[in-house]
Amino acid sequence: MVTVADSLDAAHRTTPTGWTLRAVVSAHVVAIVGQPVFAGVYLTGDYDGLRWHAIGADVVTSIGYLQVIAAIMVWVRLRHLWPFLATMAVVAAETVQYFAGLDGALWLHLPLGVMTIAELVVLFIAVWRQPFSRREARDA
Image (tube, rainbow, N blue to C red; front, side, top):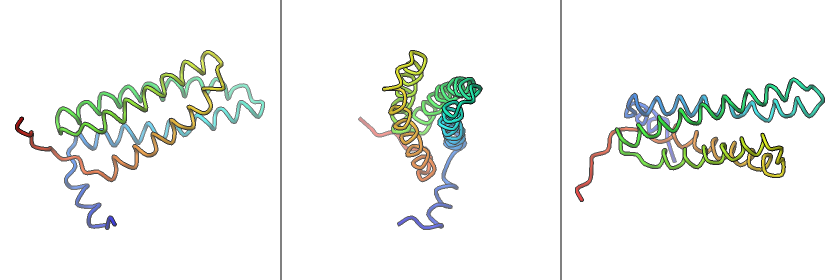
């Protein structure tokens, strides 16, 4: 069980590189949560919703690529590999979903969208629970 004291301790042990990853993942979650809203607006008959959904897709994808850079920095500077691997899974799914949406393949676009949002929310929780301090290199 995680206590408030544990959470505060984790916050104090997190480096600026870790905080950067947290900020980017947080922005990514905010952006991706808007996507089903814009799609819903479009599906109710407001055709501007489709334009907003397309703009949102560009924003979400761009933030995803920024998250890759932040995750690489966490890997290189702090020696935490898992955020990079999780980010690559999210970005790969987003990229497939992006092109499925452009192609009109809704049979893939919709379920992959649900999966991608769930995946990113789990990653969001993980990066906020995990302290990001520098790990010492292991001798080989």
